[in-house]
Image 1 (cartoon, rainbow, N blue to C red):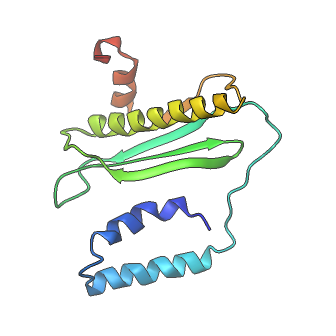
Image 2 (image 1 turned 45 degrees about the vertical axis):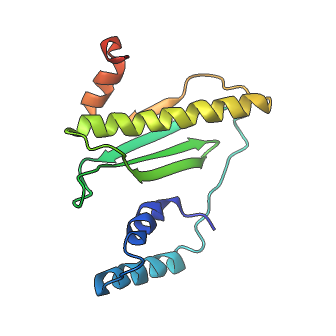
Length: 151
């Protein structure tokens, strides 16, 4: 059973595994209830389109780790109508703006896309067309389009 939508919650609760408090137990109980209620959910893939084109959805929560000030970056990679890769992790550095947090999340997603592109190429599957990045932060989009920022 695969549930990419709970990866952040599981990772967050893992921080408290050695010292769970009542609110953490309540969150674990809620998570198990969610899993029980979503047992019939499934990932499906369409065989209709034989071209390999990736849709990547990126997002970040700026400074959402109140303990250390780190942001959480997330991305989801979709092809053939289904999810093939995802991540939800605290970023390693503290950033000052949501633009930086979003840009870092998009960069991590781009690295995974390059890896997927290369591995699929090794298996004989060629990507036809560009990957589509979906980012909701206009400033991060502007930074990514400006060649002055390509150090």
